[in-house]
Length: 389
Image (cartoon, rainbow, N blue to C red; front, top):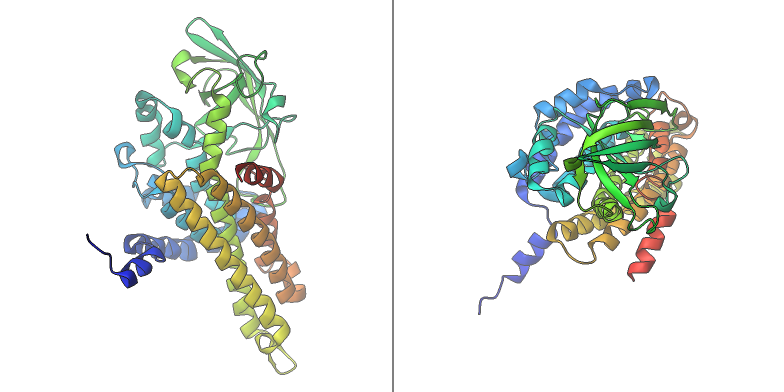
């Protein structure tokens, strides 16, 4: 039988493919040269970065979540995570451009018919269209069983009414993946269905936009559906299968949050380390003091550990392994906790300068907090992990 070269197999196992490394370097350059200079202004003005969206489309970055037959790169979850990480180092709000492109199309990719995929995915792969994922409601965040939004069948149409909450890309999205109750008698796991609802349909409106602590360049708020009529073929998956669509989607999309968290943590670590080499106290750079050295060492180590878990989870998702959902939860949980801890320490390294908006680490800390909350709070992730053990 053939025996692999042990040294070669070990080297390959712990290295990303060269084509991924090359693409990572290109995205890193874009992030450093085009995204980073805009980050403070995007945050300050709570401004959606239309210019960066156009740039990403021109560079083909929106094709990263998609298979080649729908206009994508076919490079899988790992390469997408690497891209999100690189952009998040510079601006977490801008990284959401890629994250929501995946989140809002995963239900179609995973559960849609071939006709549905051909209808919606190619224009998302080019960046012409952008989606949104509308699951949460004012009274139904972590518990979909509290969902009020309803969808009623009327001949060859569905009529959707209700209000969603905390929805990313509100007012920007061209279509929304909407989860609604279609049968209240059978319980939340069987009585919810998923639909594609275009933003230009009569009865849809943009409600309250939130004034947020972080990721301020990404609009979040309440889409309102007032007897919105959609064709029957806008149902995604089986009627009553919406809970499965939502949970299946989040198993994948949590990796985007983990990647965003790793990028924020690395960006804060890099900035704090560079600052410590320049900042002089008592006649020497503060990086010469053991108290600062230990902080930076812990920040770098924690971030590296989070990255390894993220990449492992991405590989499991790409291979379709049965424990991939557990690993995506672990990656999201660990990376987001690391991002929060590391950004707090980065502020401490900068001292008073870390607390003011002239320096980016306070923004990074504000951006980090949401990674512990959205796409399933970290408390929910712990439940998911424990139940899979």
